[in-house]
Image 1 (cartoon, rainbow over the protein chains, first blue to last red):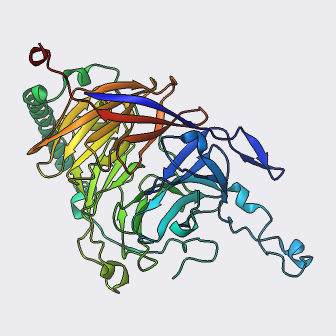
Image 2 (cartoon, one colour; image 1 turned 180 degrees about the horizontal axis):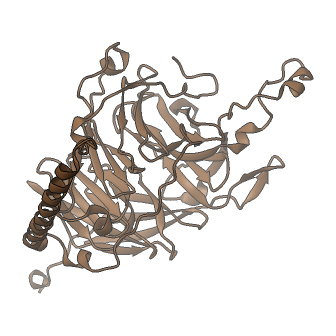
Length: 145
Length: 329
């Protein structure tokens, strides 16, 4: 006989605007837990930002700590020729905040990509022009909870 | 070809396509035939089509006993028109990650799109892509540890690709011949229309231990278990379901029902073949559908999220031995 017990919840931030104009938080769309059960990455509805949580123990989800956000890839939109002419030295030729148009469509941790050293997080994104896949490495040595 | 500083993979290549002759339709009759020939051939076609209909009806009658009767009761699934993705040629729909190898499958977000395979050992795409039919839109994908990629479509089709994921398949200069011919897994006898009775496939999950059983959730016909060795299907639950997840280390299966917020838990009994215990129904705490589920590595903690609700919730599962009252007395 199976017995299921409610073990609490990991609270996600309320819907807000990050950095002045980028929506963030609210309803989770997808999430991925690494094989060590120490890192949880969450994507939110209509937001280009993912949030990473550090988990010390799944038995105590209230202690989950947000370690920061992961942003989507650049959509690759180049600045117009007119604006590019006025571009200060060192400034990206891509439009500012064009990554804000990307949406995460799926995610997961890749098996054995980093061996015993850590977990490799993969996410696929859709922007205005194309789909892209990005990878973020979570190294075991960097995880201090 | 390498991952750039931003962590992005290079653009999808124009990989070598493998065509599948078995999927091509027969050629239509030539238009240059004479009127008389056309009349006689249309009569023959009409007669043969009546015979074919009669034959199908007889076959359906005999196969009726092999399918759950409630599937034959209307309303049936009706398909929404698939969007022609002229401006979404390279957008992505779903990804599947191999449980043991650093390989991922990436599906395009358009009907009749392709599935590409990216190998992180070589930072290259494999030399072949998997091509779907013109009306097939990928809803779900799952990898087994034995390199089988299962693809569930919005049309209720379940395709199984047995893949060559060797490093040579991504490094070699020549295409890998005939390594990705799909096998159609049938949940119902072929005499019956698939989509109206089955509905859309919403999620797939392989049994991690054996790599032999595949759990399939559908919008109309409930949850199925497909045996890859015997090519047979078992209907596990009649409730339309949104997600399925086999525990990675223990013998549990979680199934989320659509629109009720209920999660069904099954205990697996492995004795030659796979059998399932009586399900335990657990309320998720919300009445909206549980859309995402993932087991932790210990195999007994399930993380899930509900549609349109904040937070990630946790359920812990344990198997308790049933007490025998006769022995106790």
